Length: 107
Image 1 (tube, rainbow, N blue to C red):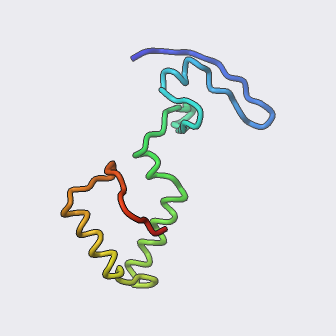
Image 2: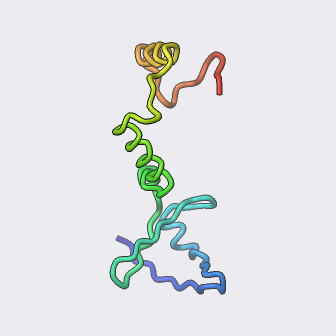
């Protein structure tokens, strides 16, 4: 594993610029997500993957509300029959999340 030592200066707003060598080593660019984990007195900096985003506090809060509603039966209804039929047809067709969307799409 490669060792890189860089120093960043904290601004008055509590911000730092992630050094270029660290950005390159982590493979992050503009818009990339970085996680900071505090372990004792050490700060671990790592790139956030798509899987890590499932741990997003907002998403976890939403999922918690959804789970409580499902457990209690509140705000939970069956899916419309036309949506169920559409979902079944997609399963049979072998479509994937990478498949092109054809036809009209209702938003």
